[in-house]
Image 1 (cartoon, rainbow, N blue to C red):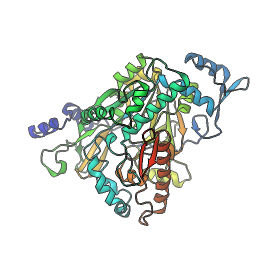
Image 2 (cartoon, helix red, strand yellow):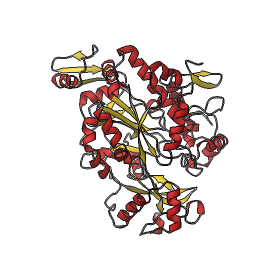
Image 3 (cartoon, rainbow, N blue to C red):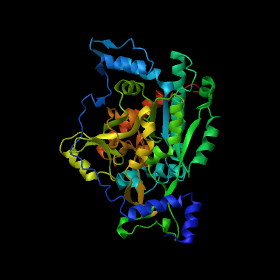
Image 4 (cartoon, one colour):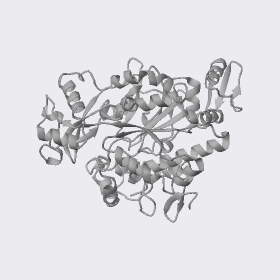
Length: 503
């Protein structure tokens, strides 16, 4: 099914040829024909029972006997701020936060690193907001794109400083916030005798070596080294699962049988290596998750590297512990920049799940729901899993997640991509919690370099930006600045964000 020249090209690019051909064979034999777009009957309401708004004034009620049993199971004391109402215990934010803080040594922090940032800096893709918007961002885009192309996205700049210089990377910031949280735990509760927020990650065959080199350098950099020394542990110690690369496939316009895409960038016998979607994480990370559970870790966060709002939240951990459900996920009200990702929907059968825009639900259907007056809750790509439930079912979930093919038109050509989407696990779970969060605090994400520029305030006063996009950009910038000055411990000094302890 592939020429010798194409096979050599695939192997040279780190593509798992056997896996690529196995997926192709299944597709051509109709194995994925039953994987169809989601038909949404509506969207769930924020009822503060299964969809909980994380906002000031929250005081979560739970039957007293049930709450005490769950606290005893986790060997946790009843927080002083909890309100005893006889048959019920009510947990205000302070009580929930205390429970979550006490569980930080038993909560792992997982990062989905994804593949290279070539698609992130793709010129065609970055014109999704329109030619006028791209022209307003084009100068800074051209300066920053060479720093991103072909590199792991996590090591590329997460923002632009006010003076125009590139900021810290996505990974540097996440690692820094984790160190600051661990030090805060030590000051409040003492040394737990185990790692606080142990780290795990999914890399890919194309990015793992470069990420390892980056971590080695990070250990010596001022943004992390003083904090790691104060904690007495490495800044970049990960349990790692390496995702294999698969090849792109022919565009649907060529019909069936589908073939391996062999004209990348117009060259004959040239393949295009791609990750098979973050949904492969349940298979790739299975050894790491089993190891964490065996070491006594009960909960595991999982989120994308490119979301600056993705940090462990003690309130969420506390709620997850009290509710006892298999998993919990973050959602925020959809904005004009939220064009790639998933939304929370309800099917005609009453099942709640995340439907990915494009692969699982057409964008026109999202617009139909909004036009009908529904508030669309957009998936923030953050999950919190109970490992007692998840670990025994990892193989089942890895097999059960749908494989979806989507057509692409990018600089490399017209091809299709096969992906499993992590958050479609919601369709497999028996139940889960949904947290309604503030987007500008919890979902400062960048699927395109243009989003990073807009979040950093580039083009803020340019009349070429539509009013709604300019307003969203302003709110994202405020959220970015709050995160940098807050959990990331940075301080603006002479036009650049610098570590507070060194500024």
